[in-house]
Length: 61
Image 1 (cartoon, one colour):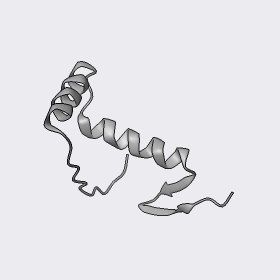
Image 2 (cartoon, rainbow, N blue to C red):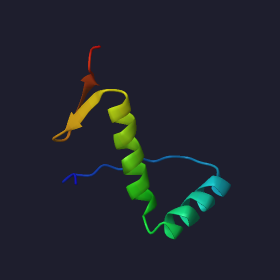
Image 3 (cartoon, rainbow, N blue to C red):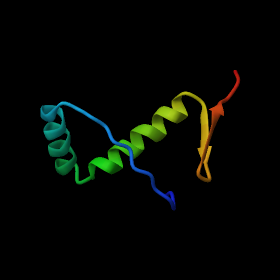
């Protein structure tokens, strides 16, 4: 897990937030864990190398 953290503020519809939090609770994960996983998967899917605290440009391809 990353050693340093940064805050990301996301504005979403209150009904979606409530449903998201309920689903997370059912799955015994925190909303933050799910969002971090989504971000990692998104970066990986788009070929972005990340790690050691620095984001790098997408890989040429």
